Length: 95
Image (cartoon, rainbow, N blue to C red; front, side, top):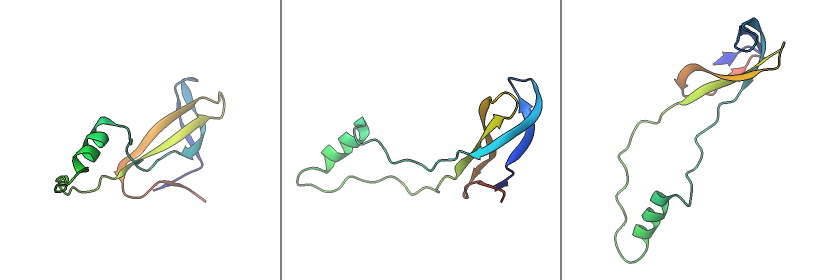
C-alpha cells in the first residue's frame, strides 16, 4: 500500500484537523525469546537419546499489520494508526 508523505487528519491534542507528517512503522515478526519457559522446555525434550518432539500444525501465514506514525506539524504530537488491517506487503511512502 502506498501512503502519502503528509496527511490532513484529526489531532487529539490540538482537537482539530491539521497536516501530519507520515512515517511507516510496520515491523516484521521478531524471533522468539531464547530464555522463555516454552523454549527451554522444548530444548530439554530434544536433549538425550530419543525421537524428536512433534511440531505444530501447518497454518496459513498471518499478514503484518501496516502501521504509520503521524506527527502533527502544529504541536509535534505523535500517534500511531493502523492502516488497512493485515496485508502481505509492507506499506511504503509515495515518491
